[in-house]
Length: 505
Image (tube, rainbow, N blue to C red; front, side):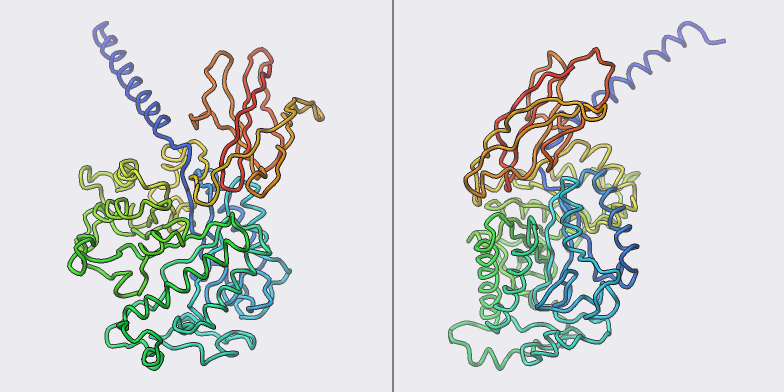
């Protein structure tokens, strides 16, 4: 029979665990960021959508978006141009092989995946960034090219490298062509961002030479080495692409996701203490120049390694990027499978997610995360998705500010009132007045506070909705309690207006 001392001990243990758990969740809630980019890449070049048909692809994407929304994602980076072809209706390039299984063949039943994804993401309060591969014209996967594809229309503007076909970065007509394609996307679709990844000059293969010497020999600037000349070719493209995007729609963000190592310290005293392939020397991509010149709006280095990797230590690299990439928002590209594969060095019984997230919190300039890739989060590999939705991304987050594009907040919402719509209490408001694109409300944030509770919209746990609609369906209550609802307006850059309050019983 249990003694009173045993019962007392059991209660002490219970209360101790209760305090520990309460402290954990209080810390978890307080650690939530109100502004944080929480993205995921949805790729097509792996063939996951090829030939599956409209209905199945829409069902698959809808399920992925629903699960990612539950995980706390607020942005999707969707691959729409894998090899100078299109997962959208285009007069410039053919329908993608990675959509229908035959380049140039339209989907049946007909639909426009990019247009559909923009609508689905915005309905969930997510941003949609259109992801293109600028130079890659043909992957190593064998298939026929459509008659209107660039490799058939202009083979002289391409070169072959290790089974790939690429647009030659040395040619100004290729820069113009890519920018024309991007202008078409940005003009016709309500995208929030335009995203390019790490494919500039091709990843080097031992013994294989880039066939561009004939163009180097006739270069204008005779003083440039071949490496500097190639970097200059890419620099000209990135600057031109940035100008194209912002002249078309100034609110569309231009983001780049480079390979995770800029330069090794053995090549540059300011480089990272790593020993791997380099953006600057091997891919001819001078990322820091683009950051410092303001040509890009955000940077997502692909830090796909584990903490403690001998050649490329994650700990070393996140600190390096934090020191060197402070002029634009810095987001970290995370490989889910590698993160959950490797044990935490301090606690081998668990994987490295918590250690990596702790590093994120320590880095002043890290403003978000992009998951590689979406399906592994949806499949909850290593309980990664569960950890996001129950802990790290438990409360909603707004996008990081971009004052270099726009820093003026919109006016506050007007005429807020509660109405009964077929038995459902609905909080309505009127959009604020606007004179320019930066004043227009694109979304609204709804906060809820209990009666007597201090209204503080800096605490993200009070956010109950981020919506594009000027109304919010109020949850049913016992009819006795009273809450205070607060609504703010967000513009395209998610600058937030002053708050408007409404007491509701």
